[in-house]
Amino acid sequence: MSEVAAGLRTGLLELEQRFLMRNYSRQAVEFVRGEGVTLFDSEGNAYLDFLAGIGVCNTGHCHPQVVEAIREQAGRLIHTSNLFHIEQQARLAQRLADGFEPGARAFFCNSGAEANEAAIKLARKRRRRGEIVMLEGAFHGRTLGALSATPQESKQEAFAPMVEGFVAVPRSDVAALEAAVSERTAAVLLEPIQGETGVWPISEPMLEAARGLCDRTGALLVFDEVQCGMGRTGVLWASAQTSTVRPDVITAAKALASGLPIGAVIAGGEAADVFEPGDHGSTFGGGPLVCAAALATLDVLDDEQLLSRVRVLGDRLRVGLEAMAAAGRLIDVRGRGLIIGADLPDPRAAEVVTDALAQGIVLNATGPATLRFLPPLVIDEADVDRVLDFLGTAL
Ligand code: PLP
Image (cartoon, rainbow, N blue to C red):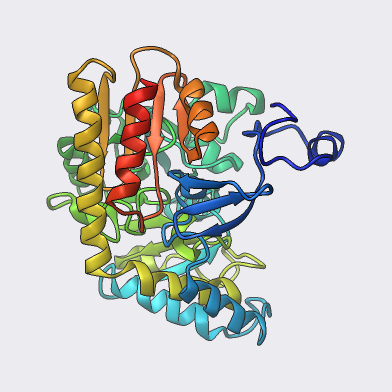
């Protein structure tokens, strides 16, 4: 990080270095304002955002409908706790449950990790001490249960021992999945498209095998749609795009309230009725402010016109990247809608991200040779073309 970088206010770096724990490495820029697909730094420079706060700002920055809902609710009531009834929470649950299946119910918390924790607890309570089967390359969060479901040595090692009863299988190995799932299994937990490890859509045969095994053994199929849900693939939930495979439980977070902290577990069938009073909870979860923001977010995103644009623009981006792959400048392109990963032939992804920032484009690398594209869903053709032009030169 360099202090002379554009957009970093004098003194901010010292303040952070003196008082913040050192768990993040940051790009040398401070964004102070956002509008649609554009972020502005503290010197007034504009950036095209192709990361959306890591898949959070799907409605674009400060969408007027979301801002208005937050403003209106903040002026009326911010917090009471779950000791009392909360209309916005019930309406949000209705909206999510109705979109899932008849009889479904929702639970609200504050993040993706917490949503997965809740889903793991729900599955374990239902099955009494059962195991959780997950896929290699998964990322389900940083709290200890969610981390135990995140089979990555680099993330787990310092915090051992992990919670017991978690079993990982390779992401496309149907036989290994069959061997791992048994009557002891409480849940198979997977992201329909793995996001953090470089955008890896899980194959149909793997999803079908997971569904079949859960049906046969009585385990729950839990889809973590924290990153790939909320319109990101051009439908509200990525799992709705798969052939016939439907999960018993969906976990959501990130984009659900356009940037206010929220997590949700949506469960159907008997999974909807597993939790009883006292089993689980959250002081802040499902508060009126965040639920008002989530309802406004759904008003914007649950719109076939916008979702079809996501598919069109995602195709445009992917076709452009695939042309670069055909020319040998990329070696693989993966993803659906506006969650796309691309592998470079060399470990230069961090350099490309830094170059992009210098040219006013916010990009992201998930690994030394992998770029990830997660723009707000309100981008247009010119935004896609600008990023493709940049990559055409940078690569
Ligand atoms: N699950 C998935 C698929 C994610 O991508 C993430 C975060 O990147 C999480 C869970 C954890 O979410 P949070 O950071 O809100 O705890």
